[in-house]
Image 1 (cartoon, rainbow, N blue to C red):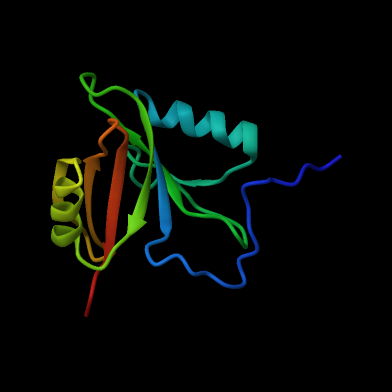
Image 2 (image 1 turned 135 degrees about the vertical axis):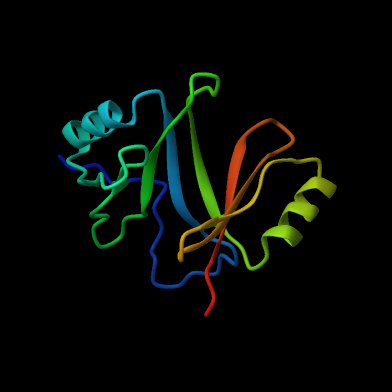
Length: 133
């Protein structure tokens, strides 16, 4: 019997100003963990960059994500990325509210930029803005 998620809402109308647009799983062995999720959920990955396998087929309603190969001194994590208009402004506001910036705005090829902060309870949250032009 299929179980319907109580988390999912009808996606016809979105009123969220800054939606979650990407997830990331930090791993000690990205290739092995991609294999785990491939077997468990049937996910397919683009492993062009073995240090960051990305979900290649998100389906009709799926969200993109990836598995980040971590250095030994960084603990594994799961985080989400929120789409924002301006990374610097959002980081500044997050800090005013008690957050700490852990990754300053960083370019991702011709895709856009990302940054990361820890919220007041220590959760890691990513920010993303698309490239313009």
